[in-house]
Length: 462
RNA sequence: GUUCCCGUCGUCUAGUGGGUCAGGACGCCGGCCUUUCAAGCAGGAGACGCCGGUUCAAGUCCGGCCGGGAAUACCA
Image (cartoon, rainbow, N blue to C red):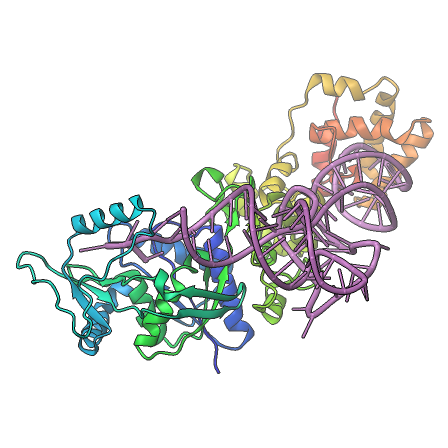
């Protein structure tokens, strides 16, 4: 059997982190099995769907590298097909017209709730052998309801949650077409999954309750029931449900904040799925390993600190040239002009050990391009009288030394020895003079990247 | 209310048909290294929600409870 999986978002907002993980898993499953990954846009809610949201979803998937093989299919463009299936079901008796008004429905539900019952449609328009239906009201346009089986139960083996069994008595005859003729969600999904020959439905577990209804509809349609895998939700850093106030909930906020695609994919892959003790792995490797058996059934809390660590792992081992290319836009964004300063690859190499994100790296790079303004108190603390003569002499030495990290380092050590100083006594004032900070990479490496001319110009302290 | 789902260190997780000092990772805490901060290296603390039951033996099986979540729409 060829695997056909799909991602079917509603275009009502940006692609958030939970949706991104769902898409990633559905995509990886298809890739793992040499199958087909289908993108379907569920845009039947006219009021909430927007073209901007469609674009945002496409952008997010593109950034993550989740390419689809078929689609995007838009449900709004499939109306004729839905209407055709509804007509078939009406003819076959698996669906029927219902003339109950919304106000009647509301009253019914309220009464049921008052009695402590589960609110559900009472089946008054459901045709049964030997039953006389009410008089058809002239002024009401009917909805179409699905004729759900009465007895027994529907069950499936969920690939992540195991066997789930729900009694048909819990399910009522849901509306599959509104009074205006437009089809509803649970119905469209079934027609689509069936028409698109979906074999694996990997989606959020907020759909668990819809699954038995969909299985019944699929069965009424004579379609094959796909494998279902329901993913638990992702909680925010604070353990609360994800929402707008959590900040970076759109995937596109991650590149914005200086995260690498590989790191975000790796993090998401590992959030709710595992492969033994593996923590850092490539997208390629993930596609080879991914399976439904190792998905956790419980909800997962997003942990920014671990994402930061992972991102840093990727930054640390990145090729400096490639990293430089990634870094450039972040430098420009904080108004650092990269045309005149040191070579970007060398900057990246110098800073990568202490920059978890590209935003951090851009910020840390500033003194390499612009001479820092030096805080007088900070300078006075480190620029001692004992250090001054040594610095003066060092400056002269540096004019002649071969400009490499090793030679610069040797020159500094020689000066320290000659003046009977301890290393920090000269390193700290140099650090402040060069960077304006008391913390930085090693001094010889900074000088090397800065170049002789710029280094010497920063060494005037008198 | 009802139905369904979930419950291992603070966090992500390993554990798959009973026996482990309950393993790894992030974070945290000290140590080493050192030119400050990182990085790196070697350590440490830290968990099976609760109560019963089955069993020689339970994180793993059964029951109940508690806690969290979802669904109960002419939204998706």
